[in-house]
Image (cartoon, rainbow, N blue to C red):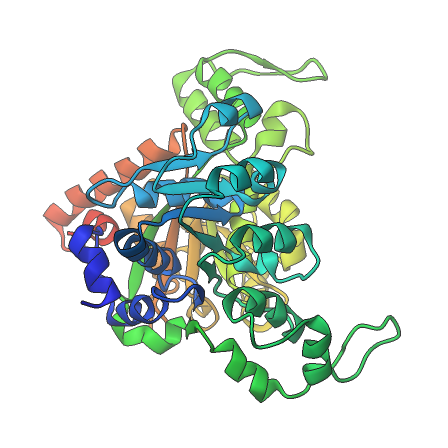
Length: 463
């Protein structure tokens, strides 16, 4: 039996793996060091999980998954879909809460900062156990000499490990950091790597040009699989919907709950926000998820939603992202906080002339990687996005199926040559989950009257 067959003989996923994903698992699962360099939307999480399930079945290994903390909830929700159930520990919370958690689980999920902070506990617990480590967003360990690199390298030394990233490197020197994990015998040390591939240096002694890149490309292919979305276009649906669950900062969630209890929030300047009326309360709750600083009276406070968008942009490398928000306040806030990505906006406050200028900039300027828009403003009549973008995120729920499908149609239209990935951000413990479910229910009702491209529930959860 192949590794995929062995894993899926013991466990069931909520969907069937694509042929290219089966190939990734069958090639990489038996390896003690592997690079899962799958483009965003190609299933890095699913493939690495099946590899871990194979290793659990064959070698009785547990799995430690180290990642940026914003991804913890997504991993937890994903692992809950596996049948029969696997035990999962999300190692997060206050020091007291973490101390009470057991590390005895099939999957232990931990953010990289907490992993480093409690490194001694992880080493002590797993020293005599069989385990495989998955590093999601492995670019965080590509910097040799960094604390991330050294702690994770030491923890995985002599153990199986999987490196996950859709963007393996920003420059050739990043390759060495990954190769130490994936194919450690290719170079004796960084000095040899630089001797083979380094060329010119700048005034500060940093390499500004490289050589023997064909050899480096061959080495990067060792023990790894590189899959681009465009390469597997025929195996992917034209559009995929992915709920992305994440947690707010505990202080942020506390403020949200305080508002949800219809209390008055007093600002430092003595002002107040009256959210006692039901409709106004719902709108306030909708806006506080992203506009934390405004409601707390501290503009320096930043919602985890911002970090989620940054992570998606990092995953995309140099790619572009279209973000939809419901409120004008949110559009302005995201534009301010994400300015370094060359952000442009489209909402009711943007004139038709400026709207066209913003569109042209998004299409033509490689430094403009982000467009933030309201679905009602950008979801109708806006053309050209499909030539430069195939990833969209709803930072706030869209309330109308018509607006939702029209907004997605900005990317699903003639000229789009890649599968479109739609990410539905859902902040746990907020009204966003209910709004998301309401959108699905409304879509089901509409489908009973007039046929749409497909049933949204089936497209998201499988049907």
